[in-house]
Amino acid sequence: MNTRKIVAIIFIGISLILGVLYYLGIQIPDSVEGYFEKEYYNQFGPLAIAVELLVAGVYLFKKHPKANFALALFGFTAVLDPIFNLAGLFTSMVPIYAMVLFTLCAVIALWLSFTNTFELGKISFFGALWGFVLGNAVELFFNYW
Image (tube, rainbow, N blue to C red; front, side, top):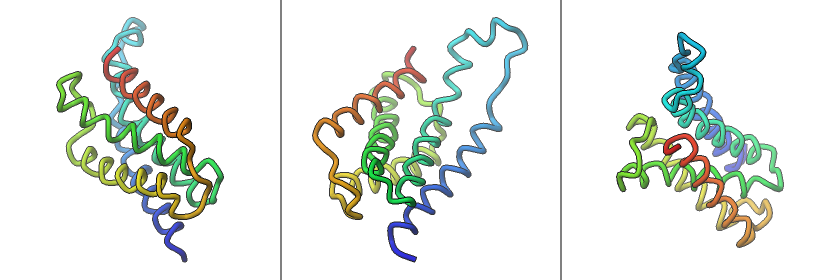
């Protein structure tokens, strides 16, 4: 098995484990009004990061041409979460252990994406910029609004 598939399997495994933990932790409101409260939607933020890691891992495993974009999108989202948390913009719903795991995976994903290590197609400047913008949008949607 080559390095690309090993990294992809690790990403998929981490995303599935954390994704299941976050899904099981979602609290369903007792009333209809609860579905329209900010706190209900905030709890989906960590799950969204896990799904981004899952998609990036599957794309990497299949050697999909958009794998580098998916890796960059996940990387920016996962790195921005602790940065915004430390800056005091919001309090992250991601637990510390997961934040460390996500940040470690994000650094690896960004490195893989920008160096084109597995020759999946070099990410363009606009692709990287779009990944950064979407990463910000995901973070701000689930944590700020």
